[in-house]
Image (cartoon, rainbow, N blue to C red; front, side, top):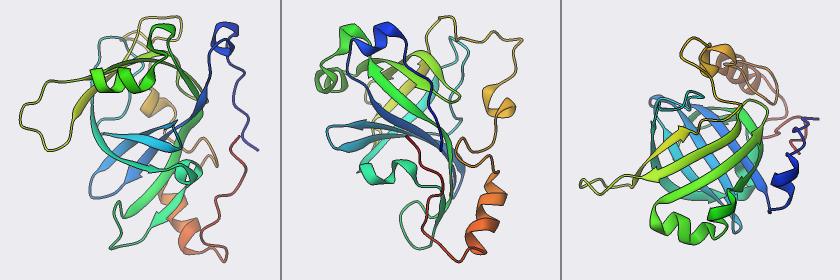
Length: 194
């Protein structure tokens, strides 16, 4: 069973929800941020993945909400389905809005959400900021680490290189694909998430 670290005391004062970061080997390798909120998974695709270094903003393209039951999925999405490819549960845990953003719906409408993550790999405060229009078909946000005790400096290893494998199984994308293609129990997720 995957155990998520206990949230900090101030975190408990506010509500919290599950989140997941998926490493997704689709047409192009990218990462998907999923925040459980109001019965769905609010979703963004990050072409470069998250960075734990403050000031390194990562583009986060908002995509349609996903079914909340998909939060723990790790395996193969077959063609021709949307998102076809190998999906890894790269990180998971709980999230909460920072105290000044407790009205999450208003924050998302206004284009700025400060959030706290307590995950297996990602911890601390983060910002999601929507960029202005620019004629994009899908809203583009910037996902960035806020300066805090969990932030990394430029000399520290990149979290994506330091911890490339699944938070659920410890497997690489290639190992997940092999296991999925050679499993008798396709469609099972494996160990419990939360």
